[in-house]
View 1 (cartoon, rainbow, N blue to C red):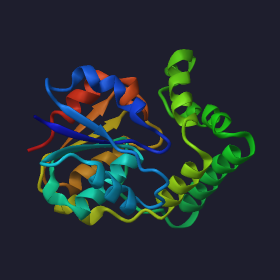
View 2 (view 1 turned 135 degrees about the vertical axis):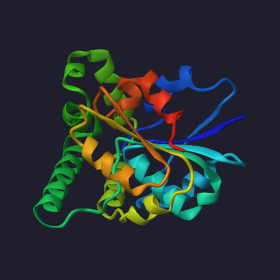
View 3 (view 1 turned 90 degrees about the horizontal axis):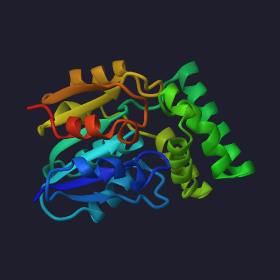
Length: 234
């Protein structure tokens, strides 16, 4: 039986993976990791390994979860049978203006969560999160907002700390020996196709998939996302 370890992104939970359930292989076992209030990617990876079932793992990480997946591979590469990295990145916080812009943006959303509540923050944040045509789909947007609102301000602060202090994972990508799916989205303005192409160039056994959606690929385009996860490089 195939065991899938699913790593959610910033302020996400099992709901981000739920649309993929009809597309998993028959008999597949899926474990969605809960990071708690872990405030580093390394600690998130340790908690993921602690929650994982025994045996070989098919690991999929979305957004921040992709960075956690790379830290898991740094800690226990022998546990990973295949790897899928979705809507994510691998570099540390940039220096100079680009890094300062990221810090300011994250600080604004954290302050909004503290002053007006996580739900209010989510309603603002979601505007850049999905393909533009999805913004008019109120039920779909509410599913994302409700998922984020289930998390606390303390979790948001901890996860932002983890992302600000994220390590460079270039060496991890270069050392991967398992088949890897690198999954980008054409309408993802946060994690560009170009940065996923750079990841593939570094990774020995990787295949690039580009989906026609935004940053929330598992929720926006579940069937192609599942197919991409199940079709790693060789």
